Every structure is written in C-alpha cells, then in structure tokens.
Image (cartoon, rainbow, N blue to C red; front, top):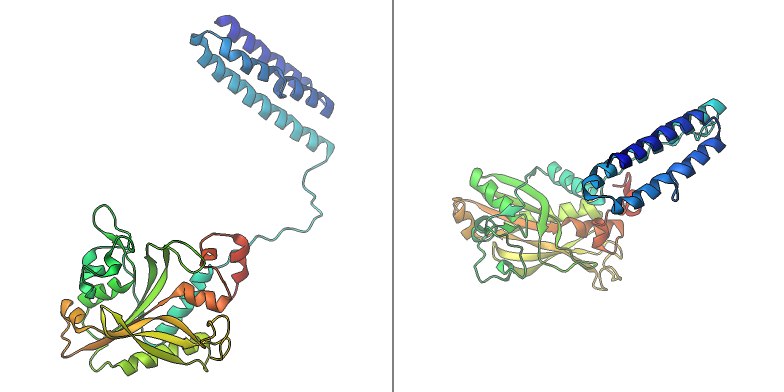
Length: 341
C-alpha cells in the first residue's frame, strides 16, 4: 500500500521541480502533455486504480485527484506569469468597451401595467388574491352549481387536499366583498389555470383581469360605458363595442363583449375572421345570489363585473400569432419589446 502512495508522492515532487524549471512556453507545453495530457502520467495512473487492492483505492484516488487539480492550477498560473512577463494579454485594451445588455419588461407585464393604469385613472383600485383557492370562493360563492362543467377535473386542476388552482380571478371579488361594504370599485389581475392543451391560442395558464363595481343605483349602462371607455384607450377613439346575450352563473343578465376590429375598422379582415368584430370577454350584472352570499343586500345595492384576457390583448396589439411565445423565455422574442407602450 505504502509503495503506491510513495510512488505518487515522488511523481508530485518531480512535477513541482519540472514546473519550477519551466521558463518558456515550450517547457510549459511539454510539462502539460507529460503530466495532464490525455496520454500523460496522471491519465495512466487513473487507469491503474481498478487493479489496486480495495483498501487503497479510495485514498489513492483522492490523492491522485488532488495531484491532477494542483497540476492544472500550477500550469495555468505559470501561463499567466509568462503572459505578464512578455507583456501580452488576452484583452485588447484598445477595443471600445462593450455596453452592458439592458433587460426589458416582459410584454405581458407591459400590457398589464397599461391596463391597470387606465382603470386606476377611472377610479378603480388594484386587488390581488391567492392562485390556490378553495372551492367555496371559486365556485360556491360565485353561484356555480356542482354540475357546472368548470368544476369537472377535465377542465380544472385540483390538488390532493381538495383545493384548486383558480380558473379565473373572480374569487378576488368575493374576498373583497366579504371584507368591505359598498361602494366597491376594483380590478383584479393575475394568473389563472385551466386544463387546456397548449397550442397557438390556448395555454394551461394565462393572465386575466376582472373588474367589479358595486354601489347603489349601478346599471348595465354604467358597465357598457366603462368597458367602451377602456377599449377606446386601448384601440383608439373610433372603436365600438357590442354586447351579446350569454350565460354566466355569477351574473344576470350576462353578455359577451365584442370590439369592432381596429385593424380593418369593422370591414372584415383575417384578424377578425371577416366578421368585423373581435370577442374580448364576458360581462354582466352581479347575480343577486352572489350579493346575498357575501351579505350585501341586493335590494339596496347592484353591481356589474367583466373579465378579459391580458394575453389576448397583447396578441392583438403586438401582432403576435402564438400565445406560447410569451412563456418560452426566448431572449430574441422578449428583446423586441424594450420601450414599447
């Protein structure tokens, strides 16, 4: 056992002497090839480990690794010294300095900030809530019956403890109405999750924003005016909106919101599928059952709510044709949005 370790020690002493005698590049290269080259001494010693007695393998391997590391560091050190002595360097100090690469905000962050800015100027506060919800806040309090498709595991992600990844930011509305008395005027942005297969227009997670206004005398006309004003800020003053009857468990009456296509002025194009209109999201008057659940008297107060997809707006405004680009972290894609909007 001692013979093998002594032999290794002798090799190390030999290396140290040779390293001290290396005064030029040729000497250093010969030293490198002889000791740490692919066919050098250290490589051959590693091949011998398998034939050593079991009781010596571990210690011999450790000391050989240390030898290899020391040899590499010593050769690198001598190389730097030779560069310094010769006045050469790997850095050309006459070259212009490279400016640091400045990052940019993600396009969805830019889009969300603009949306929040518009609604803040209209008197809405920004509210957020948990992404992992209980079924009461996500479904029951929003008047969604157990048979509703959105409660099926094929549409929604359930966790082992029975909680659920929220499918919309509507639970934030419930939490705010539980904590405050009207008047309430909020928007709730955040990520939501649905059991969708990823493709150009679908993702299992995306960003949504919902709005809520509850007070005395709130009407559907207030909803239409607010939504129209928002989309005028986004798409331009000439844009129009239309409300198509629909069904949502938590609003009554309910409506889908369409916006006249800003790219063809409603004449019909590829983006609006030749219809002149683009579907943007849902809306409606808050169902009295929902107000009762959060202890707000529907005989005194009324309210409306609406929702929209932040990715959907970003796709339209930035001319992007695949929602997956937002989540792939491709720096070439993201760097296009520096300073936009």
